[in-house]
Amino acid sequence: MDDLIELDGVEKVFQVRRRAGLMRRERREVRAVDGISFRVPRGEMVGYIGPNGAGKSTTIKMLTGILVPSGGRLRVAGIDPSRERTRLARRIGVVFGQRTTLWWDLPLRDSYALVRRMYRIPDDRYRENLDRCVELLNLSELLDVPVRQLSLGQRMRGDIAAALLHDPEVLYLDEPTIGLDVVSKAKVRQFLRDVNAEQGTTVLLTTHDLTDIELLCKRVMVIDHGRLVYDGGLDGLHAVGESERTLVVDLEQELPPIEIPGSRTVRVEGPRQWLAFPATSSAAPIVAAVADGYPLVDLSVREPEIEDVIARMLHGGRGV
Amino acid sequence: MAESAVSTGLRAYVLIVGMWVRSTMAYRTSFLIMTLGNLLATGLDFVAIALMFTHIGQLGGFTLDEVAFLYGTTSVAFGLADLVLGTMGRLGQRVRDGTMDTLLVRPVPILAQVAADRFALRRLGRIIQGAVLLGWSLSRLDIDWTLDRVLLMPVMLLSGGAIFGALFVLGGAFQFWAKDASEVQNAFTFGGTTLLEYPPTVFGKELLRGVTFVIPLAFVNWLPALHILGRPDPLGLPARIGFAAPLVACGCCAVAGLAWRAGLRAYQSTGS
Ligand SMILES: Nc1ncnc2c1ncn2[C@@H]1O[C@H](COP(=O)(O)OP(=O)(O)OP(=O)(O)O)[C@@H](O)[C@H]1O
Ligand SMILES: [Mg+2]
Image 1: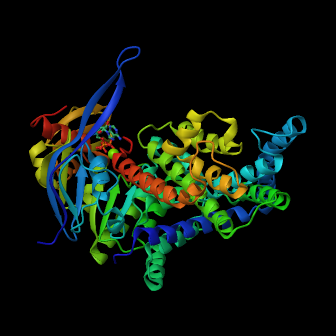
Image 2: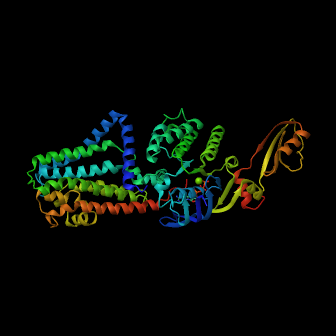
Image 3: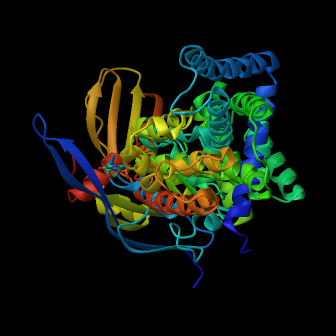
């Protein structure tokens, strides 16, 4: 009943003009979103993934009212985004990883003050939210720096804070961890998890980093060529795609390929070996077996790349 | 809840403008220099016209004082529109690079945000220059100040500002489709002012009909000014036609509003 985001057969067709020959221009249609339907209940945190050009950003732009859909039905909190854009804007927060929504020439503090007045945020809510964001996103030293002087990671944290000052019910994040270092990524993820858990904010997140999804989302939707090709748990995605994690093992000396049931050695380079095993199974027994039978120096586990998982899924099993 | 878009728009406009004014005031000297420069640049224009009069005495039957009146009223009307909506020309840039997206996610009408963006108080320069010229011409002209002529003065300036404003918005809306159309807009707005600074009598009938019935620039100052100056309309329109200026302005604003809406719905953003 309480579905905050509802899409029924939503389409977006772009008219693009391309040069065809010296003088002629050719009109062409790009079906960026080609009949997508899904629902997101209140309080859920959903991953929205897919290869480049799949239509993720286009979907988000329709959900915010930036783009008018070419077909289908779309509701966010019961509002038709493109018809009542400004009314919806009060209830949603948006972060574009690629582009700031802050004022380029203003210090963060002034940007936030402007946001407060634009959204008419009550004073106590504003203070509370700002204090929380400043603390959890380490913004205190950045507040007086003009946005154009912030580094990418600093700016992203500033943007995330700005999107949450007005207590939005829905938060759209289009690649919020792009270009962030490991520490910043961890901070942002922890923060988003807290926001979702404590405020019950519904979150729709796109990313090319599978770890984001693994740490944040129980549910993931995969889109390809504008169509929804998977909607379910992350485990299910791995199972469908038969994706593999990799155990990188450093041994004391060069040895013939390791043989352990439940894994296969895919690469050997001097004393270092790569063992692949299904992403759905645990690494522990394999690690134990390696440690047991081989002179182990170091090891690490690599998650599958999001693109690999999707590629495997799209091409049915054994992928690229 | 159901607060009108106009009042939220105005409120946001004032908010953003306030922010820009505060941030330009931080560099007060540079602001003063820019305003002065703006004043001089627009003032030089009139100096050129005045120089012309040292040779010819009359232009299309109009004296220097009358031309100064036309010039001043155009400058004030255009200056008002330029002050309020002058950054509209940068819209095409926003459409091209997709930064329009960030305006569209805020709970404030886009027009207010675009118009207030980088608000520049230095554009007061043109209004000041226009007002000074207008005052000078009024002190020298011998006008028969009947009540309707007195009334027509503010009506003319405000309607004129509104007509230019509508042209700015229309030009802005056009940029949603033709992303490099700021030149077209400039042709109508800046081109329009140059036209209106001269007496209508120096132009051909065809052009006069065009700016009366198609793009109603003539209502900015020509038609009301003719009545104030007590001169007949070269097209033979009734003397009080100038009083239609507010109606014409409303019509222009309505057309501009519709075009603006259509433009926003046609916005395609960018791929990245
Ligand atoms: N404004 C636009 N005009 C024309 N085509 C567009 C526009 N925006 C997107 N497209 C096209 O629509 C398709 C989907 O683009 P979209 O930006 O939604 O992809 P995405 O899933 O966000 O990809 P990425 O992972 O690279 O961000 C692409 O083929 C793109 O070229
Ligand atoms: Mg994208």
